[in-house]
Image: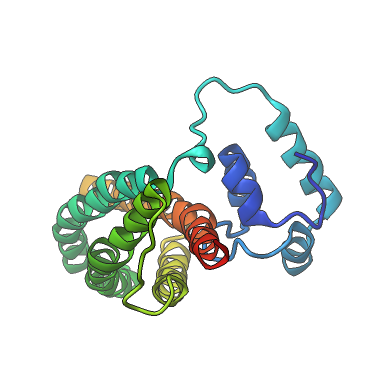
Length: 241
């Protein structure tokens, strides 16, 4: 792929997830704000687009044996993967992180008041992300699977919500909310760097939060940059058939 400053970030990461690490290193959001071009993101960050393009090109031309090409997956398989891998991960980690974070905020909150805010933000995220995933699993993902089946059997399908763009628009808005929430958590924790007086539980909690955010980035990327636009394109095929 020929990478230029006009390349759309989300499209690039969808084709080669290895480039995500370059964007992350430069503080560029590739999931929630993946619809920007490289040039636009660089201008906002005041960094050289030529240098970033060069780095991205180097990464994308390296041979890789282990990269998963999610972009080539059938939509129903990708929806299954997101649900079983990322949704289940979120559910499990919320149960694991919540008591740790509550304890750390209670014990260290006097000396590190930012922990109180971090706990509140994570509590809000846990509740809203759980409801968000339920909507995907009960409404959006089943319809995506129906579209795939209908396309394979050359039959029609009816969207109870008018068009798949309606729930997708809502899901992307909620993704933006989570992205902003975790940007605040990252800022409050100095990118999950525990202070010198941190106990082991404090350090483990920050490590879990960092891992959680990284998984969330991949989770949102797979939906915003691959599953959602391809679902919209698939629905449009029925309209033109």
